Image (cartoon, rainbow, N blue to C red; front, side):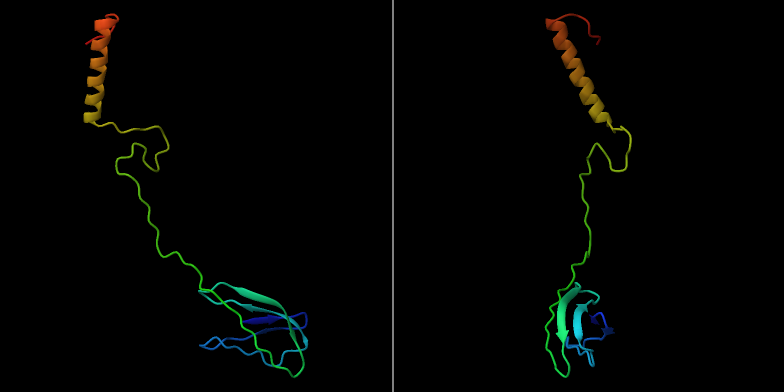
Length: 120
């Protein structure tokens, strides 16, 4: 915990229950800041301190969100693979045979109805 004003800057530590004390602050207006590991930082500006008076302040802090893991998934049968920077495709023998079969069927159809420009 820190109390900062134009006249001074003082640091203290909260106890296990979160209570804190700044003893002997000079007359001034302070900005109080709480910054602790695992929590979001919090500041309250405009806290005035007067001579021989005690003030009670409540500062709420929230736990910080943390990334505890990361999961990445993708299909095992993607044609485009991560990290490949060129146009490279993997075509299996079964895919080649299926494409050749479709080409033969298209040529056969064309020979029957259009012309004889396809080769077997």
